[in-house]
Length: 82
Image 1: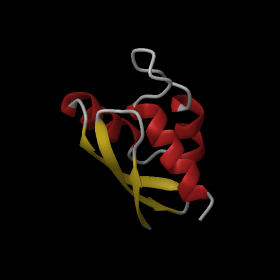
Image 2: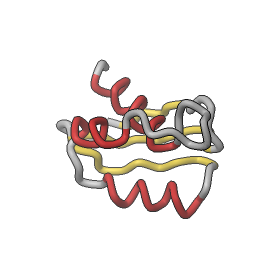
Image 3: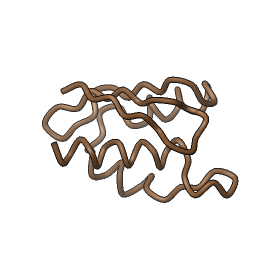
Image 4: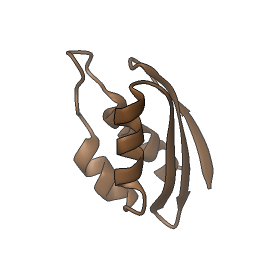
């Protein structure tokens, strides 16, 4: 299932997710620090949604109260509730 999530409080603007049966097939970040977001995308591919949420939720970037990894966790929580 494809899902788009508009981020809040980060340099990335949007995360496009492809999740099937609770497994992440793809996570694409639009904007942000390209190397970091590309790395996150590769690391989470094939992982269970719940495992990624548990690892990334609450990660902070420079005192913003959120980060690209945290926004990914929020996006995945939204996907779970659909």
